[in-house]
Amino acid sequence: MALISIIEDFHPLNNARLLDRAAELVQPLHHHVKEPVGGFKLKERYSPEKEEVVLHKVPHLAMGKGENLCLDFGTHLVGYLTLDLSYTGSHPDAPAFLKLKFAEQISELSENTEDYDGWVSRSWMQEEYIHVDVLPAQLKLPRRYAFRYLKITMMDTSPKYKLVVKHAECLTETSADVGKIKPWTFDGSGSALSADEADRFGRIDEVALRTLANCMQDVFEDGPKRDRRLWMGDLRLQALTNYVSFRNMDLVRRCLYLFGGSRFPDGRVSACVFTEPTVQADDTYLFDYSLFYTVALEEYLSETDDEETLNELYDVAMQQIEMSLRKCERTPEGLVITEDAAKDAFIDWTEGLNKRAAAQAVLIFALRYGRRLARRKNDWSQANYLMEQLELLKKGALAMFWDAERELFVSDGQVSPASQIWMVLADILKPEEANRLMKKVRDALGGQEQSIDASGCPMLTPYMHHYYVAAMLRSGLKDEAREHILAYWGSMVDYGADTFFEAWDPAHPEASPYGGAAINSYCHAWSCTPAYFIRKGLI
Image (tube, rainbow, N blue to C red; front, side, top):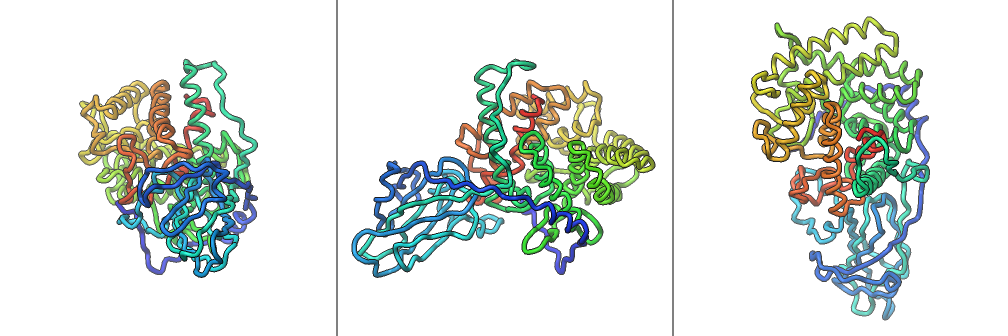
């Protein structure tokens, strides 16, 4: 299901004052040198079978044509590779022709990426073909990579010599100060966690924070392998986790200014923003992402009481609310989002998902935050107006989507987990009704409830699973929320995750919304929020 927008001759609306402010907030990057902790050879080029190599022997291993050497750097890194190369045998009489393949997961090393035929550009594949004309040589790659494993394949050489990798290192890069974070420990109070559960949460927290740190660069990137951009939906979740961990408030502020400083010509916040070579809003608009701008701004202000940022970005946030309200139609029962507007929402990667009910709920959810902003700004006229619209939207939601007999939300005939989750987060129901509804969602995901289409409209991403956990907590199901984090994110840890993945189905580890797992991101920002739930004390 491609999510591609192409607007010819697109000219974003740039606000020089806001972009200047964003430029002032560029954060210093922290660097560390990391070396491999182990090595192995694949027996066949695309075989997962491997032969372990003792690390101290690596500088003496000679590679001839067709041979490979895989280096394990111990954990997921984001940075720049340097290789010191030499040779054995006679003086090289032909270039060394190398293929370098970077992998976030060990399974990627045995993939034949020539088989990939998905809709996301294969140019994101972390592979390089390099000729080295003179040996010995130090090879410094100018491109930044996200990886744990490096596979070096000798594509061709001369019979007169073999290649030797004398040394390898990665100069890592992040704007997160990882040294300030202490491991999460369970103090034994306020919860019935067992020792095993506490240990498992500690491991999940560690992986979640590494995921966030490796996505904290010049901006909060969505993923350091692909797309390496600032996306609004990811930003909101990254910021929440940042508030309970690294607390790099200026990086959040910078991203808010970037979104406010470069927008669609009509003022809409773009789904993502490019920062190089200059700042430019992408020509992709997502209904729910634009509303998360208002949410993220209010959450930032709740953490900082930053009046200057409130004054400078308030109008941008209110504009997102106003423009979204224009996409609603008035009915005798209240306000209801139009079908066309709902199609512009992301919600999740689920193919065939009807998004109308969920999009209506996101708008209601965002209006709550918009009203808080207005009250913070002492804009009481706007606060009262938003309250009126909020009530009309709630009435419209109940009239259009709520099936009182089945006690479910139905979105144009479809009953999906996403619709139920977002309506609970929008506070449409009374607490006891929300509690019953989320128990139905839980049972549907476990295959014990047939009234919700959990198999036909599954949750495909940790992004949607975050909102599922949030909805369970909102409806008083703390034990169930805790169990889901342990089961879902914990299954990624069991699979060998050093960082959490962009898309994950424990029953189908190779699943991809992009047409092939080879393009999947195995370190993705919207997956980092277990650390938020854990460190916030919500579970």
